[in-house]
Image (cartoon, rainbow, N blue to C red):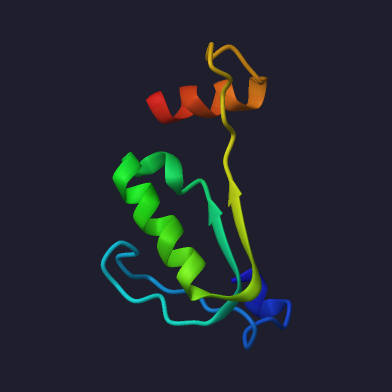
Length: 88
């Protein structure tokens, strides 16, 4: 992975587990959730966000990133494109 070739192998922990059921370990300085929450029902989102908060060090950073369409589902263009890609 790119993060290893960039010399970050000792600073990044990547895990392939069931995030809903497994322990996340930690504590971590940051938790990144990129295009994750839109695939999880509302109750599951609460579980994941709680687990993220619990695994962060005091003052840690939680980053949630996803293209979110406005209430009318008409924009912004990147979010509409993303929703169409998921539909396809």
